Image 1 (spheres, rainbow, N blue to C red):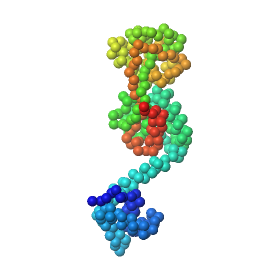
Image 2: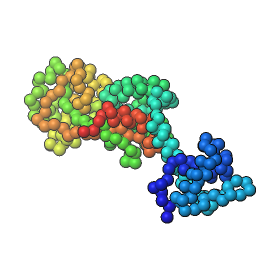
Image 3: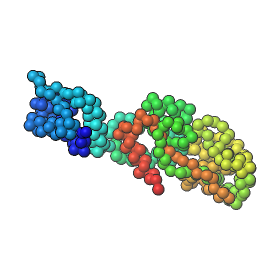
Length: 298
């Protein structure tokens, strides 16, 4: 049985060169070592695999069946070592090309600014395309490479896509500063009855994320307006004097104040997700590494 524990990377390179060139002399030139060194490594390889591996002929050396059997495995190992070496030598300053991020309106306001600062600082030659989040077409866009990374919520991501948790988020009740006091101290029933707006970035509807929670308490929300994005919410809340439930990281805001509730709403996850095809690229591994630094898990 072969004693693999004695196998060294330099011996694998010698074996690969001999399999390719069928000549000790040519292998030595390719590897930048002497022919004697190649012979010494071949002797060690024969001891390890308990096979001659190569037989001398008038045209150099001919691989044995055992050597031919080893050939594809040796190539796989050396390719993997090469990839590890590239990762160890990875320098984001040399990154170029284009990286495409799909982000919800929420993610554009809360996550992207800090991430883009890091990307720009460390990889100034990398170009970034930010796409509007399209939940209906997300799977196809990721599979075809039109999106490299999605910043969103788990409900929108196919189960087959790898993902990473960024943080736990929570909806809070907000009102305009000028009238917030009139909502403080109200019961959940009174809060539910107050006029409210919701944010529906993916599909236009008069339904919100807090509906199910209120329904579980026996209350139906009085939703009178729907907006397609978070960016317009503060102005509309202030102008109309309505309540809204926004993710907590949308605060603080100059126009809004949190309204305390008798009970807190359940938390939800904010994630980054991608297609399996993106997992092995250096730029993707680097950017997801930045996200892990920005949002370390406790």
